[in-house]
Image (cartoon, rainbow, N blue to C red):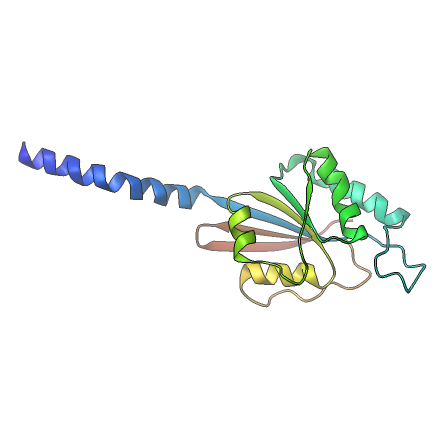
Length: 170
């Protein structure tokens, strides 16, 4: 009887840590990173242009591409072109677009806020790959060409494993 009682106590006191380990293992964070759609380039002095017609079409196409993905959050820099790229997806998914500062990308606060979630992040030709590299904790991806608005970076974090892939979506 004493052995059975001891075994019971060992199991009882280890249940919380076992449950925590199981939660950590099953928790997956997935980031979808895109660059903003095509911007209006008619005014070279405009530092905050809107999307052009092709960009508006691409933003809608992104929302169609993402229709089977249930995002928990959508982040965008506070520029017109990124907000307008994120807007159709956010509207379809009934989410607000959360602004982030492109000078401070993958912070501890961001990692905590998005842990275990599926997140869309809309950025720029230089900030998108930089953000991905920060999540990966290595310099793997170079800046996106200025005329390329078709790249989709998918980063998945599951436990201690981080995987990434890059797709071209036309």
